[in-house]
Image (cartoon, rainbow, N blue to C red; front, side, top):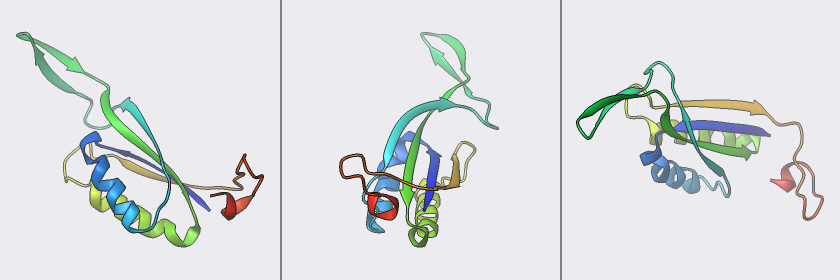
Length: 112
């Protein structure tokens, strides 16, 4: 099993969700996060004053998937979230040793 963490632009969440559901992905966890990378934030105007936004709002998706679905999910996320501009985000992939469904006590892929 693999865990995918993807940081994407908030307005692209629906596109990414639809692309993953088309692959048969049944569950994911979404968090609203803030951060910066190479773009180093941006400058905005508010009531005539300019100010710097250093931590840009993003969405963090977390999914745990079977190994055979992982590569397709990565491609779907990358395609749906890509604008070609700085700040498109990142995808991280981790190995998952085990998963346990609390309600039933199932382990491994049955728990996912």
